[in-house]
Amino acid sequence: MVRHVFFVILITMSGLVSAAIDTYEFKDDVTRERFQSLASELRCPKCQNQNIADSNSPIAKDLREELHRMLEDGANDQQVVDFMVGRYGEFVLYRPRMSEQTYLLWYGPAVLLLIGVVVVLLVSGKRKKAEPGKPKTNLSDAEKLRLDQLLKQEQDK
Image (tube, rainbow, N blue to C red):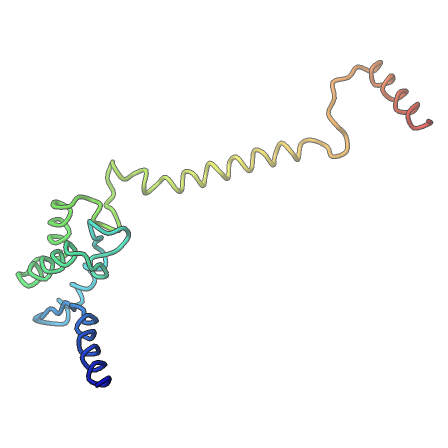
């Protein structure tokens, strides 16, 4: 009896484990490679930092089906990318195009790095100019003499 219950539970649970796997038929291997390349370069609009090839969201599934349909209809890579950008915006691209809106994205890190290097050079240059061990003071000769006398008196105590 226990074996029958265990068997029924095992059969029931095995249905829960199955997952949907998308399979697409392509006319040649070149189209399959283009599909895989484009699916890995296009970002899922719903998911954070996942491409449509790796995402399990319904929108990613729809995008994979649309990508497959477009490639089977003979669309080139640029037409597919233009369609996706037109429908979902530049967000769908992992490598955004160079445009006025993306200059900061492309050049910002280099500019910040350059500013950091300049600041470090300026700060280190100021430190090199100051002589170590000799503090820079604006004391007159009389003040320096008086300071030396006070220091000598302190040492003699």
